[in-house]
Length: 200
Image (tube, rainbow, N blue to C red; front, side):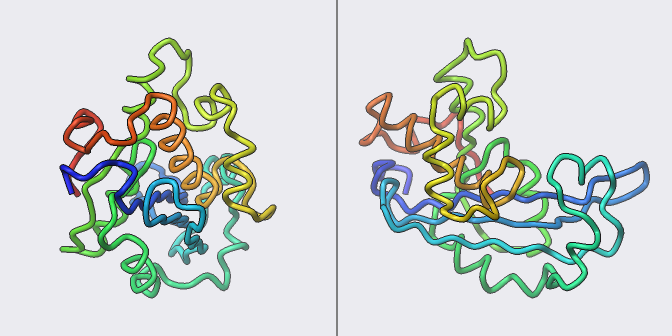
């Protein structure tokens, strides 16, 4: 995989939204979004998203960011029950996220999953556009003029907003596509961008 060109790899961009924390609490996921392509520029992405049941209320500070409330999770499936879909979407792909520490942490609920390697689009964006005042996912995408392309990739008005897990996953994928195209990195390998690559 390390020596395969970026455009020829399978990619799975992932994002979680969480319930938020207070001192002494452990955070839990409340939404997952995954966008998978077999080849970076494939025009037929597979999309997966779900709300996730949480054993405590969503904190107000978190709901203010992503818009997900405790009531919206009333009939949501348990996180463990989503394992077959998550495994199917991530297996055999390079996993992509924008500063994916939270995604890695939540996936540790499934020990020994073996997903990865991971590519961090935040690290790529900082390297490619160091002069941007803000490298958050939304600001980078808007600065590059690709927000409409992200919306088209999701193709579902329900999820067409920042901090929706599916939308943010799609944005990570579209950001990678844009950077690879703009910098003529199609035949670049993971080894060539080692600064943005990590293990599971």
